[in-house]
Amino acid sequence: MSEKVNAFQIAQSQFDHVAELLKLEPGVREVLRWPQREYSFRIPVRMDNGSLQVFQGFRVQHNDARGPNKGGIRFASDETLDTVRALATWMTWKCAVADIPLGGGKGGIVVDPSALSDREKEALCRGWVRAMWKNIGPRNDVPAPDVGTTAQMMGWMMDEYSQLVGQYTPGVFTGKPVGGGGSLGRKEATGFGVIYTVREAMQHLNLNPKESVAAIQGFGNVGQYAAIGFVENLGGKVACISCYDRHDKKAYTYSKKGGIDPHFLISIVDQYGTVDKQKALDAGYTASDGDKWIEAEANVIIPAALEGQINKDSVKKISKGVKIIAEAANGPTTPEADATIKQNNIFVVPDFLCNAGGVTVSYFEQVQNDMNFYWSKEEVLQRLDHRMTNAFNAVHERSLSEKVYMRDAAYMVAIDSVVKAMRLRGWLNGDW
Image 1 (cartoon, rainbow, N blue to C red):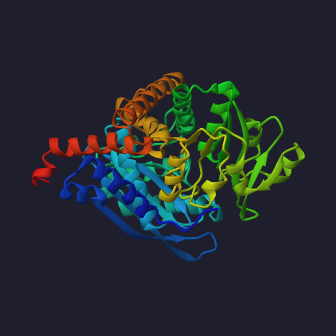
Image 2 (cartoon, rainbow, N blue to C red):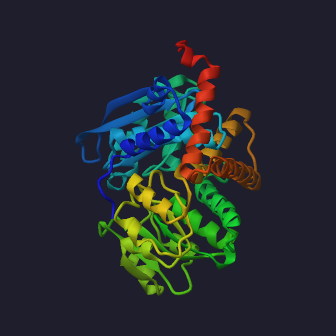
């Protein structure tokens, strides 16, 4: 389904559009169109077979006017510098729209993590830290897990950094294992945050959650907890999920009469989001083409996979019954598809608002690390719900008052916040 897209061009295009609406002066636009700092480096790793392989690593720090850079580290075979640039940019807006005192960053390594042993993964994680440790830290850049990385990997990275600086520094990485400096509620955070915003959108549209049906693309951590939240928190039904099968090298859409059971599917999924196809079939599920999720008879669709999945071709296949698109993934909708969605009057919860639950609880984790005092899961999720609800309402109110698309309103809120911070710090007077 995915057409060839450049994520950074999309990020810049979206910014340019709203910068025009806000009438930002050209110099301010130029500051925000590009990252402040970019790092590109090579990481040598001795593999299990004795060979020495060299991997390409990245870290991009987009803007830290509002606080330390924040953003995940992706292990992906198709990782590019432009993808990392785009994701770092979106992280700046994500933190700002959620009113979290952090900036935007993102990192990555060009590698297929499923092809590595645990020892090789650990060596690669520690190598990334050795390349970047002088330019990250709790007060300047705090990485976290993302596509292809896990809590355990963040634990290894935190340990390597602590050894290099000579003191235990849990706040340098978030998304760590619980018991190793991690926060309760972190694994649920992004998916549940998506559902909190869907709930608010349903209230605005006068939709009954208990009569609602969702279709979800992607069944990694975000898709899993979005499915659980939609069923258990909202009382709705999930018609289908689509996920990539790393064994067959293709995607499948899994569905079942009466709706899927997210807990069952989670029980047969591996750490890379691949459902055990045979076990699903044995349990009465249908495995159809991976693109079929977008055609499902649903009133909510949740893209929770990779960027560019709703494009000028696939957008035409969206069911006429769809009222809400909740962008759980980063950049899932291309500008061409966005134009069609606006014409069709579908309510969009834009990505950097919709999926801000992860970075919100990552921020909570930093706070807990600083205090050396940890909250209960209930307290974490309650605070998350409060933050996500406030963020949604701020964007929705801006959308209504300015009579603009929700994506434009989210950008307006976020960009205004970042520009204000830059002005208050004197950056726009040439003092930085």
